View 1 (cartoon, rainbow, N blue to C red):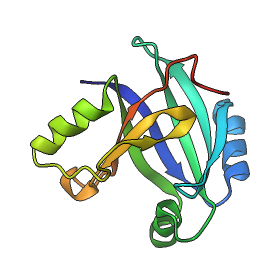
View 2 (cartoon, rainbow, N blue to C red):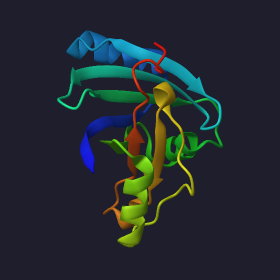
View 3 (cartoon, helix red, strand yellow):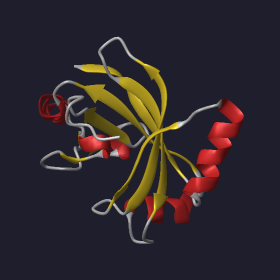
Length: 146
């Protein structure tokens, strides 16, 4: 069962400049940053608030580390902006299977590692009214590194 908006992913050309905009304009601070080599991105997670299920909601700023990454290709085609929306779930495997059974294409056969050691998969945007949608099961607090 989807429990919350986990994050909204925003593709950007310059991560540091974009982080500074969100800090100066809205007061958001970086909660976590990392490079995800598999996905070819450098990212910063800006925490917006805590949620009733023990998780949080974030803005995820994504800068490609290579042009052939999914985010790099998306930026070249669309420019900066909202890249995807992610919903939190306690069980990404079960929810992905349930959604697949409803006819929506799930992009990964098995969930992959996402930000902060989460487990993720994506749903095809053509099956979700043009919105690239991510499902996220957060790592337990003791697994998460800041």
